[in-house]
Length: 320
Image 1: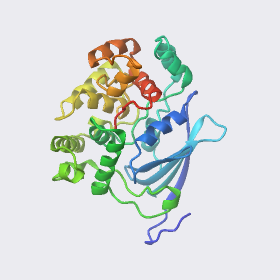
Image 2: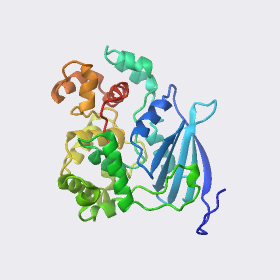
Image 3: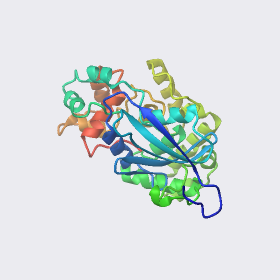
Image 4: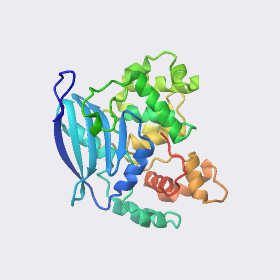
């Protein structure tokens, strides 16, 4: 175990196996996460994903890769404080969408001629979740109307300003993961955030507004949940209504948060430029209303249809 230069106890190591229902497209999951990896918080190397983690009494980082010769992922947790709990296990399963049965999703979506070849090519593609709902909310706003690279840079600035530093233990093993994503309270109280992040004042105000709402009601973004959120249509409608009520949060942002943080399988950001581009396939891109009508046949699995379309088009924009 690595020593700690400041004399703080070295992290405790825990190993967990996380079974999944086959098929499971780990390269697809890694590809999605790699494009959005926030420097200092998370990274992808080879077949492994690593990130800093904080939940309840736990604080540290993790490394996740496929378990050899098993239908499972293997998570190696390095915790400076705390020990794995059922809530932490639920967060892991939520992040990697491990509880989904892909077979009924494929049977439903492959009826569509546009989606059928995409499902045949990547039958185990899952919808990446989020380690923390507040983090995903911040990512969604930072990703509004900018490229993935720009969104990643903005998130890195936010982390540098308000994220808690982790002890400098074993950096070489975890590729520079040295900070936790900020908590809601410091962002809610931040002054001149737009100037600090070099972004429009209105968007910075949205970040602070979401942070205030998350601090007052963590369940709004799913952070009180145990990973088994209601995914019925009423659940989606209620979630979207609560999110849209926040200043500066439109339908795209609300749908994206519902899709990834709240694990709503029918969430669908119809106004997304990348989805319109992927559906058009070189032709005229549909407007949001037309795309929504086109996607009606994909219900109740529109989030999975969106992931297939985003993954098939390497240039498609897909949020923060």
